Length: 317
Image (cartoon, rainbow, N blue to C red; front, side, top):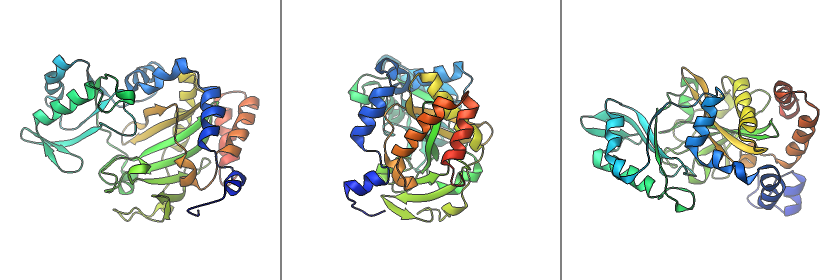
C-alpha cells in the first residue's frame, strides 16, 4: 500500500473511513444503552460466563482505595497474573506478571517490581488514570493466558490476540495482533505491534504490517507469517459472532486469545473497533459490510451466517 493515496482511490478500494464508520455503523447499529456491557470488561466477563463463552479466570476485583492492600491477599501463592482496569482502553494500565523471585514480581519485560509497586498500580487504576474519560474504576485480577504454543514464535513479551470484526452476527474481517519489543509487549498497532491479516475462510495469514509497512517475518523472533494458520479457526469465528447476540450491538470487534488447554477465549469487546484492520488485510471494510448485511438477511441462523461468511470472504471464495 502506498503511504499516500487519493481519496477516490481509497473509496474504490472499499476503505471505510472514520466518519462513515461512526455514523453509518456505530451510530446506526450500536444502541448506546448497550455500551456499558462492552466498555466495562468486568460486565463483559460476567455476561460471557452466563452464556458459556470461555474467558480468563477472575481471581479478584479491587473496587475501593481502602481495599488496595487486599490485592496482595488475592495474589498470595500466585506466580502469574494480570491486573487491568475494567474500563481501560488501548492496552493502558495492564500489568502482566509472569513469575516471582522471592518477594518480588517479574513483569513480562523481565523487569522486577515489589509489592508497593503493585499496590500503587492498583491505586492508580482505581483513580481512573488508565480509564475511559478518567472516571473512577475498579481493578480486575485475572489468570495469565497460557497461550497456544503454535503462536509462541509470533509474539514477543506478550500474548497475541485475534481481532474479529462482526456485523449483524456475520464475521467480516480478522487480524492477529502480535506484540513486539517496540510495542513493549502490548498488542496495539499504534504502539508498534504487528497486524497480521487473516483469511476469514481458512484462518491463514494473508499479509502482515508493522507501522504501515508490509513485512514478512516477526521483527524480534524472525517467525515467517506466511506459515501462520490460526488453530480452532471455526470456534474463533463462532465466538466472535456469538458476542453480537450477547451484547445487542450490531457492529463490534471481538478480541480472542488461544489458550493451550481451553482453546479460544474471549478477552474483551470493542464497540468502536479501529480501522487499522483494513491495513493489515490490505482491503477495505465497506464492500464486505454491504455483503455481510445481505448474508444476515438471508441466513437462517448463527451457523449459516458463519458458513456463508467463510465462503464469501475467504480467499478461495
